[in-house]
Image (cartoon, rainbow, N blue to C red; front, side, top):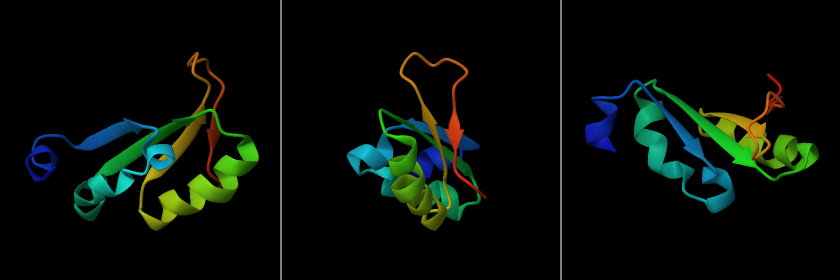
Length: 78
């Protein structure tokens, strides 16, 4: 990751909270880089109650999408 943070300004990842590997992007967030995590298959309630606090703690941004990648989206409250 250290080498990538020198080249890329941000990262978009999928399912890292569901799969438990978001901590691999701490180098990005510590360098004030944006990390956006896209999660799928969660209820809105679970996403807001669990994923949103985790992403806030890790200085990341999370969105909830449907697998079909339609315009439907749930974001974390500010």
